[in-house]
Image 1 (cartoon, helix red, strand yellow):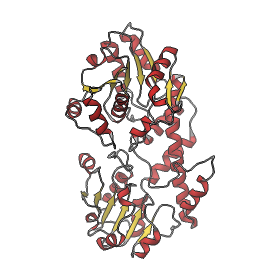
Image 2: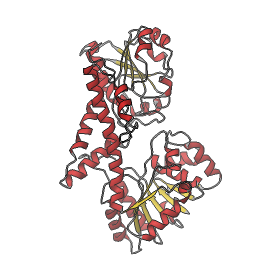
Image 3: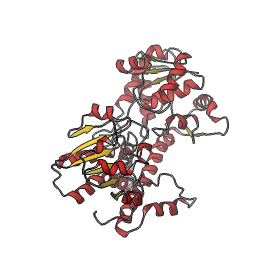
Amino acid sequence: MKLTIVGSGYVGLVAGACLADAGNDVTCVDVSEEKIALLKSGGVPIYEPGLAALIERNAAKRRIRFTTDLGAAMADSELVFIAVGTPEDEDGSADLSHVLTVARQIAELAIEPKLVVTKSTVPVGTADRIRAELSAGSELPHRVASNPEFLKEGAAIADFQKPDRIIIGCDEPASREQLERLYAPFNRRERRVVAMSVRAAELTKYAANAMLATRISFMNELANLCDELGADIADVRYGMGSDKRIGPHFLFPGCGYGGSCFPKDVKALTHTARAAGRPLRVVEAVEEANAEQRRVLARRAVEHFGDDLSGRRFALWGLAFKANTDDMREAPSRYTIAELVRRGATVVAHDPVAIPTAKRIGMEGVTFSESMYEALAGCDALLICTDWNDYRSPDLDRLAAGLRGDLILDGRNLLDPERCAEAGLRYRGIGRGQGTPV
C-alpha cells in the first residue's frame, strides 16, 4: 500500500520504518527542513535501538522517503497518518493545534478522497474535529479513523512488529477493512486487531497509559511505606506479582516516571474527565504522587547533608527518563538536578546516550562526563536516576575509591545493598526498608 505519514518524530519514524519494512511504500513528511535533510542524508534525529538500520535498509530499497511537500506525498497515497506532536497545553489538556493544522492542509491539498488516520495520542472527540476541518476545506468524501500507537521507548521496533494488540477505531466498514489489510503482515501468527469505535480507540490509549502510570505510582507509594516499616519492597513485589490477577509487570518502584507519554497523557485524561463532569480521582492522585516521587533523591540528599548544599558535589548516573533512549522529557534526573543546584550543589552527570540531549536543553550547575567512573571524582555521593545496564553491575571497589564520600542514593534499586556495604559504601534505595536517614 502507498502511505503518507505526517510527522517525522518518534511515532512517525518508527511507524514509517516498520510499515515500509512490511513491504509498503511510505513517504514521511515533516515541516522541519533540517530534520528532513538529516533523514535524507542517512541520519536519524532520535535515538531508538534498531531504528537507524531499519530506515537505512528500506531507504536503499526505495520503500521509504522523506519530504516537506505534503501535497506531493499524498498524490497517490491510500492512507494519510497524522503523527504530529500533541504537547501539554497550559491547562493540562492536549494541544491539538498541530493535528488540526495538518487536517486543514490535507483538505486543501488532497486531489482525491483519503482515509485520514490519527496515530498521535489525542483526546476523545478529536476525530470529529478532524472530520469537521476536512469537510470545511474540501468537498471530497474523506474518512477518519483512529489507530493509536502503543510503543515503549527503547523497544519500539519489537513492539510495532510483534504487537500485543492493534487498536483500530473506525465508524465505516471500508475504513476497518483498509486498516486490517495494512496490518495483515503483523497478524500472521495470531490475530492482534481489536476493532472498535473511533471514540473508544481514542480513550483506550489514554486509559492504557493511565493504568501503567497508576501501577508505577502505587508501587512508589508502597515503597515509601516499606522504608518506614522496615520491609523490603522487592519481597513485596515478588509476592504481589505472583498473583496472576496482578502479574509482575510495571511493579518496579523508583524515582518517578517521565518521558513524552505518561506525564502529559495522565494530565490530558484528567482534564478530559473533569470537562465531562466525571473526574478521575485515582488518576489525579497518580499525578500528585509522581510529582513528589521525582524529587525523592534530592530530598534524601538534603536529609543526609542538610538544607544548604553549597560546596557539595554529586555524581549522577542516568539523564534519560528510562534506559535505551535519549529522551529527557519530564525525566526524574531533571527534577533531581534542579533541586540540588538550587541548594548550591554542583552535579557531574553521566549517561550512555543522553548527554547531547542534556547539552541542547542547557542545565545550569551541571558538567558532563563520558566516563561513569570519572564522574565520581571528588563527589560526596552518587545518585542513580536511570536503569541503564551499564549501572547494574559496577565495580564497587572502583566506585568506592572514586567517590570522596561513601553514599549511594539508588533511584532504580539497581545495586545490592549487602555488596555495597562490603565495599564500604552506605546505600539507600527505594523501599529497601532503610527509612532512618543514613
